[in-house]
Image (cartoon, rainbow, N blue to C red):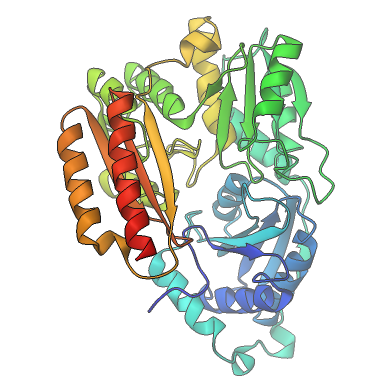
Length: 448
């Protein structure tokens, strides 16, 4: 069965386009029915980010869940990892995050978490999809069994305490000047407060959401404002989260970016030295730089690669017993603490290393020189350009030329009619030649 609604990270699309009140209500009913597993009162927690459309979707989902007999606990604006944590902590049967992550305000989405705080499996998503296209009138609760809904207080404090407990008890951020950019999103209240409680001198930007400005020229996808602020305030470090705070990008004291690959290197090496790596390995995607792989190899740590997407990273981590994984985008999963990516917890682990080493962030967070990496996209209208003989020949030729000195990755996008060509290697000119040769062949095949 093909997936009609769910993508790689829940259901996402234009608010009042794909994500309508009708769909949200139906998702509440369908998910509520799938997660009713006994005679007790079932409960769901719902969090959201700061998009204007969050109100519409939230109340539609409340109607859906209560109509099938589930009680609803409304958390308000709160990070995605906090929803995952609270789902398990509060013994909920289901957790919902209303967010389109790093997208702009026009989009929104619905992410679902099971009772243990993990994103749903493909099989469970298929069960929900099946119900979305059925009439559910006969499966609704009787009048006396309808659910109740209420807003609950104190959830921000619970998440702050949870995040602080991921650090050693005696560790303080005293003397550290930190600029935090919350992307005008879900973390705008909790993260600046948590950093201040840990002792940091905190300068906050991206903490004035108005329903429209989430991720707009701020946050981890637009870190230029953070870089400027770090230099202006002469801060020690900058932290940029995305709209739902499951991603993080850092900026050093010079205003230079530190991506997810460097963060993985810092955390993996530190955890290995402290005996905290569950196994001598780190899980990353095919997009992580070859420089990271070589660095980890030098530390006696294997890099296990997965397809693009945090769900695949987590699958490998859980299946093979690794406790550190992530993506260059800053989606870092530390399974000792969280069941999904947590940008703030990942940033705290790096801050702990900075405080321990007492060295500038530019030194602490530069563990390797990334290899030159070229990424180009080829758009096509129809057909299967990757099946073209000339394209196949160009890919084989490119792999031979890069053999032992780089990597080549050619893949179709999962969300649009685009083929992505990524090459990396020690010789930038060679990589450009290889990528351009394949792009030319793809362009000719797409035009044919």
